[in-house]
Length: 342
Ligand SMILES: Cc1ncc(COP(=O)(O)O)c(C=O)c1O
Image 1 (cartoon, protein in one colour):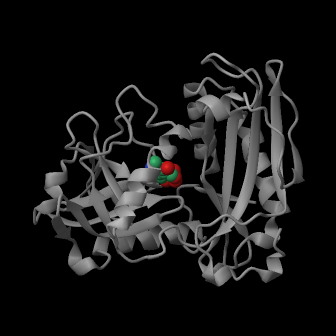
Image 2 (image 1 turned 90 degrees about the horizontal axis):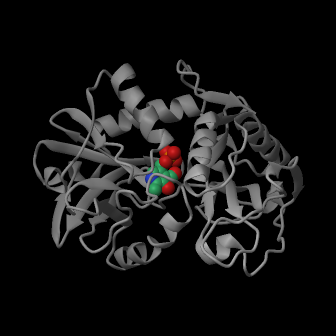
């Protein structure tokens, strides 16, 4: 483990760095045992474990931020707990009590406090809860033992571009999720399949893929690990909850901020990628815990490019970014009750 004093918090990217402490809880004989804090480290697992063989695993992504006044905050952790349990049910795993989940997150953050990047670095302590089928199995069915772990990593921006526009490639070759599948659960399986497409897109000079729906290859779904928004005809549009997108907590918050604080009409609907190529589409961005709000400079499909706003963050993108990060950093009043202090 690196000594936190040796970390340059001002030049962090989104890369793994071990911190001091993790939380672990086991589910055995049909019930959760009391979880505990342990030094971050390796553990043994059977080669026949369900997670390794059949991908029975889920995760969450959250952030603890250091505010200007030194306080440490979480953003809507109850929503992460809800989604964690939704994902657990979809992958036939036991749910974890919401209060215990939030308490465990707070304990891990406190135990790793020295790793929280300072306020002015713009970084955060990323929190990664995972739950997986730990026990050995052979046939394709659920494990009987499960493990929940929460660990943390100090991070900087997810896209190295920071609050600058990224270039996205709209893929007609790859899709991320199909109706009836697991797209709206945060299961590990959804992510392994996006690594090759992302690598190929990066080799062509793009930051990520913008995925289309699996049936028509027409309607926008989401970016690798972030939700999609565009200003179209003066309204803020985002793909509807179709069961194939991950229903982001940042996405939900942006919809509220845009309609209640900025007075912008919001639409959750099917958005054809062709709409992005028309003048009525004036700006676009993506959102997520890791991505925060990342402006989209351009989209490209089969060599046809649409550049937004001279590649600069758009007016609405800027306003929403300021509102959201202002609330998260407790510089703007938390009128929605989204902030939990650690
Ligand atoms: C596929 C995918 N879409 C969207 C998001 C954004 O969700 P949230 O705003 O809850 O972080 C994430 C991850 O965080 C994701 O993995």
